[in-house]
Length: 434
Image (cartoon, rainbow, N blue to C red; front, side):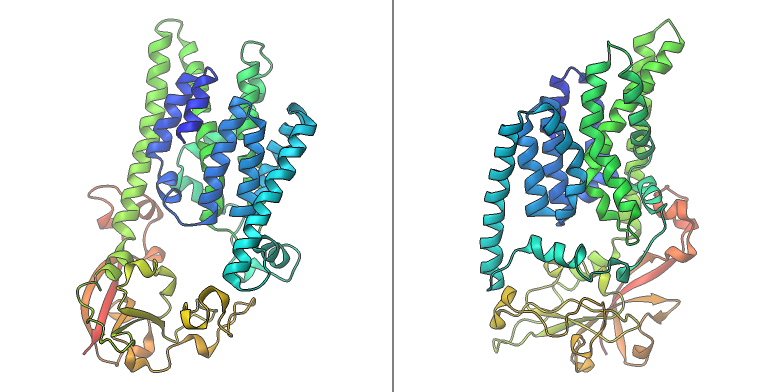
């Protein structure tokens, strides 16, 4: 991000650089995406380097960054790299660019093949596996849910607020400014640097299955386009008055940045206030779990049912505890345990499948073995109906927003004094056996 801001400033766009660094620091979208352990986040930062390299005219670094994103990160980001590939072909030295492309691809593929083969215990290439299933094979992402074409606009309104519409307006402003010799060079380079976001957003909108994380790849380009748009609009508004041009421009830009930052802070507050109960519940198990007996068996078992997808990760559960799944209303395939005795990454549970079908082997056999149960409570009823009479004691319960019964505005943004009165809550509950 610093490299991107630095190169933008070196290109003679200092005001845009100041705005960009403010947006990167305060954006709710960056708050969420930058801390996620996801391929999209890895690719996001590689594309940030590529974008900065476009601004500085370093075609070799653009090629290497995009190649690393596609081969090491998320292969479908090749779609987002298409505008940069065209730019390299047009502006770079063709022979040199081809040499860098083939060399970087060969080295990265060889490294990936070596690591994949070692960890899977057979000849394997994760890039080939991904493409053979998701692109050329029988993979159907729609099995995991579908959304309509407005999904990313709605999601962008939550995490990017004003920045998404400003970034969508940017290409028209860039094209218009290329008509003026004074602005042509800067507008042209910004149009190229920001172009992956529009190609990528168009591509992922066409897919039936949509997720917020898919947008992460182009968040910095969205910030860059929005920062330029804010500066352009600030200049246009200041031109209305011939007096105090500089002051009016600064005020207009500051107002946009402050407004966007305030909305982002409100969004982050809503996430922390409304939806952090699951992490706090799992962290609450620390200190309550019994010590290991020394016989190799886990002294406690943490069970969950249909709320399994809210489970953050094993880092939030004591090492002395094991996580298991109860049979619930959820009817899809569930994650398998890591089993070092069977080879760890070299083995896979027999029940895993590509049809999202549940299997009895994914559930705990003896439900009485559960030491703790994590579940949602709706109107004093457990989210797992068949567990109502099992005799569980409440150890800890925390408010958790009930989305279907709460107003969208107050779910999306934290508004002091008003949010709590306009939201309906369920309870995220940690139980132990009576």
